[in-house]
Length: 184
Image 1 (cartoon, one colour):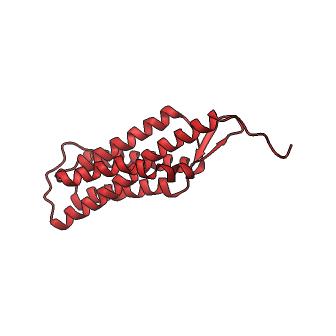
Image 2: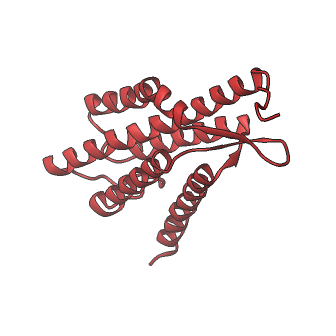
Image 3: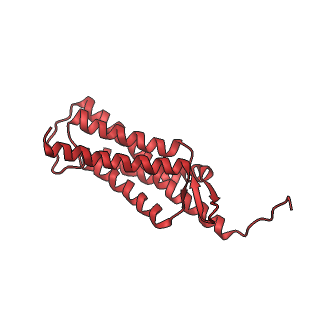
């Protein structure tokens, strides 16, 4: 293994650790921090764009358009679903934290890993290293990449919906007056 290959794998590993840690915290419960929420939403969209559009060859225009429509449309369509699954609670210290069920973070991480595997194993390239090598796709490989890209676009859209849902639930909760405890 060359130093360049080791550095590439280390970089991919660091991104994977970051995503796994965030997914774990979302399932276990993590503090509501609006700038962090927005920052990670932007990071997920950036990673999606880098992985989907940063490979060689670029996807056909219709596939790229479909991926963009999926990323934009998924939050719009799934926001009510994701909002119902956000669990918001107070910590003993008085701050707010949120939790998500396993499905939303797991879908993103698994589909991100699947897309990376397609890049590394099938296409033989690392999407985070530029310039990418020139790769010629067979019809089967092209269909595989398009399918995995569409699934990854969907999971990215779910994570965008997660950010919006947590923000909306949080804003609604802090805007509503506390309800009296009926046991008193």
